[in-house]
Length: 113
Image (cartoon, rainbow, N blue to C red; front, side, top):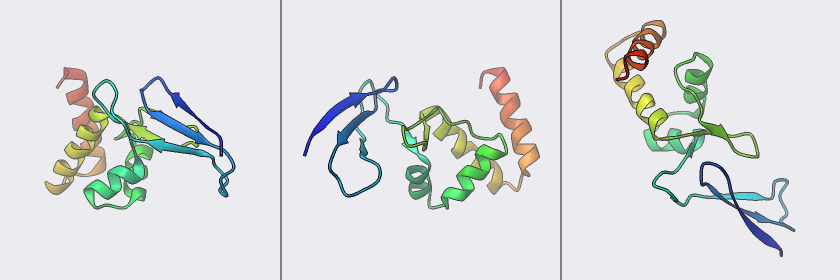
């Protein structure tokens, strides 16, 4: 088995392993270098107890903005987007509609809050 390490611009370490019986040969190792870890949709969904489709819906509706993508095409989110997701949950709990949430988040982004 051969492998090598690769670090991307967001300091995510990838270990590329060859001769695995799977289609994709890149395994993401979550190691914090420089103080932050990017999370995938599945990571956030598991952390907050929701379905990944709910996060993808928020992306589609323009409420969340992925920071980057993995080589396999998975969305990655930084701490700022995770905080934005938490804000969406707070607003949903207060019964705001998607359109209203988008406006509130847009206003808070433009004001720097």
